[in-house]
Amino acid sequence: MATELDSLIQKIKEEGVEEAKKSSRDIIADAERKAKEIIDGAQKKKTAIVEDGEREAANLKKSGEAALRQASRDSLLSLRREVIKLFDNITKREISQALSSKDLQGIIVKTIENFKKGEEINIEVLLDKKEKDALEKTLLQALKNDLKKGVTFKVSSSIKNGFRVGEKGKNFYYDFTDEAVAEAFSLYLNPKITKILKVKD
Image (cartoon, rainbow, N blue to C red; front, side):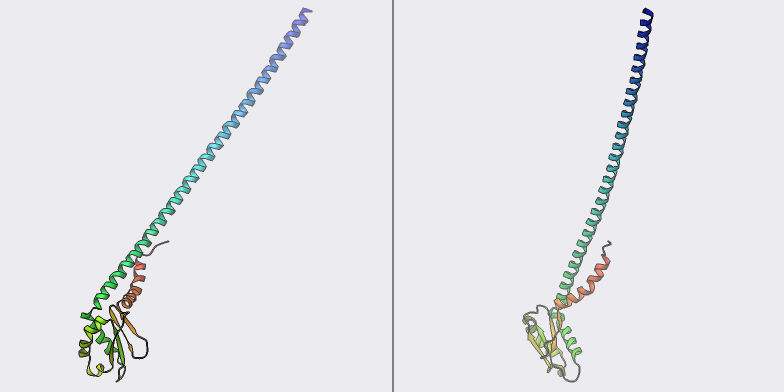
């Protein structure tokens, strides 16, 4: 009976040990599987974080470059406006000086001579009061006799420098004031300046 009992105890021990070994192998396999899942999950998170970081860095670079291009374009547009404004101011100043009393007489005489269509001329020249008072006498002396009769000089409060000339009673004048001549020059020059300072999109 003792032998049977020893045999039974031995069998129980062996089965218990075997069961414990199997359970231990299962626990280890489960732990290894869970560890692999954790490592794989961490690897995926690491990859996702790196990809997100790279994507964000690329977006920041792209938006930074776009902001830099826009700032550059804005600066060039501002420079172009300033250059055009500078040219406009220089043009106005130079034309205003050119249409001063000293040069104005010759310009008016030439304009009147070119205005004559036939035998008879009937035109009026509009000037500011100061220029009219200073120039009327010398202008009449400078004009040929046949032109003197048909020319009338009038004061216009809207003229500061230069003059307007037109046929009497027609209410249409050719405008040779500093503003009109400067505007004509600006219309010619501004597109050329704009072309030189063209902004590339």
